[in-house]
Image (cartoon, rainbow, N blue to C red):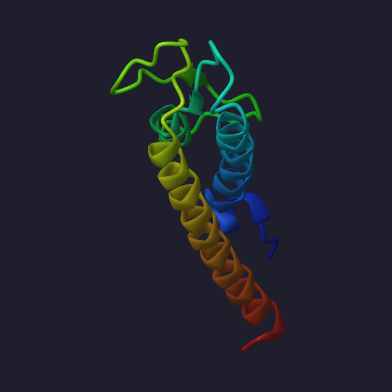
Length: 116
């Protein structure tokens, strides 16, 4: 009997990769909060989940979009510092959740291999 790790681990490896890439983009937004004309970016989680639910093989190329600010700034920068910090924190918590699920899956597989 063979174990197909990609099936056994589910979507969690892709979600971890997505969260890492999103962290990079959100960190870039935070670093450029004072840069005139900088356009805040984000990744589309809905598109990722739609692709995963459709059974499409996912690449590391995620759909990046630009965010529309709630309040326009005079210098054209669309980063809203408080909202961006909240997104970064939420993404970190989501990363930790996916990592926890992945660890539980790996523990279950290890238990099955060891006959526990």
